[in-house]
Image (cartoon, rainbow, N blue to C red; front, side, top):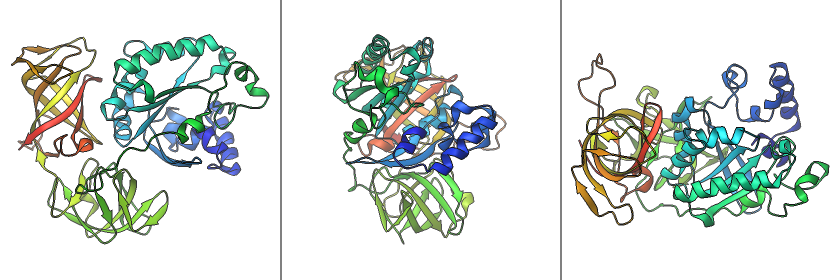
Amino acid sequence: MGRLLYDLGRVDEKTRIANERGSSKAGKSSFSWAWELDGTIEERESRGITMDIALQSLTTPHRQVTILDAPGHKDFIPNMISGASQADCALLVVDAGTGEFEAGFDRGGQTREHLLLVRSLGVSQVIVAVNKLDQVNWDQSRFEEICGLLRAFLVQSGYPSSKSSFIPVSAMLGVNLINCTGPNALGLSKWYKGPTLVDLLDTLEPPTRDIASPLRMPISNVFRGQSSGTAVTGRICGGVVQVGERLRVLPGDESALVRLIDVEEQSVPWAAAGTNAILYLTSIDSIHLSIGSVLCPLSDIVPLATVFTARIIVFDIQLPITTGASIELFHHSRDVPATISKLIATLDRASGVVMKKNPRVLTKGTSAEVEISLRVGTLSSPISSARPIPLESFSVNKDMGRILVRRGGETISAGESSASYL
């Protein structure tokens, strides 16, 4: 993404040279473009990988695109989920190098898990950029092999084929990002006559925004503004927020006043559903604001739940899900310990009709209705009961009703809440 931002004029020459010199000095010269979005010392030098969500923006002829650069490493899947939960579309970058693509796509690979996670969080549009194709001499058969494998998996995972695109690129050389010309592109231009990456970004379909519903804004980050007090970031999942409005923070009993709203580094009087915004808040101590909390109107607060029912689809797992299974529940930027407290029924995946009540286990590929109960994190915790989380039924607010379930470092299912109660 760093090279694309540079080619579009979003990164100036001074910054590019500084990143190039810094990455070379750290012994990671090939990471110079990544340094535009990987800003921490740990990301740049210690680990050399993306660890947290980075926010940037770019403009195409017909679209204003907000980029959420998410981690690809399995150690940082929770951060990836936080970013994906704020996305409308996905840009998946895969390595065309021999053995590199296979390592990510084979069973247990991160390519598969990322695609499943993103689709489970409601994203249906995906662009697959097959990168580093220059390293295999712009081999058309290698590109088509990767596309064939991914195309079948995308359809199997629920992505509409009409909303999936594939494109060959070389980010390091800048080939087919905004144009496919010049000496570096000769090998590709012999057989590829399709759109560039910017062309595909320019044709993405903006989803319908739910601006008529009550405001719902899950907090993805909390920080101290330079001169404007406490600030929170997040994607608005419904409704509209205005400067001067007083909002409730859930869970908890606190409220805050919206002093300023920033969108794309511009101060605005209001922001609507679908917007990634920064809200500067007053009349509240930052101790009462945490990642995963939800901002909502005083008059129409989001429900809280410690126990709820959900309809889930079980992924390709080896160990079946049973009653009492300990899990990690993900909802937007919040992840909490929970338990599958009851297996209510298995369902027909197409119609949702009950196939069997009170099943003993759930195996891979099963669609089911289950009861999930939040639990206290540790046995030594002084808190005797689990703290409720803000959660709405999927039928009321789709973004607020989606959940992911992980166990032992593996995503085992995803679904939507159907009813909740304390």
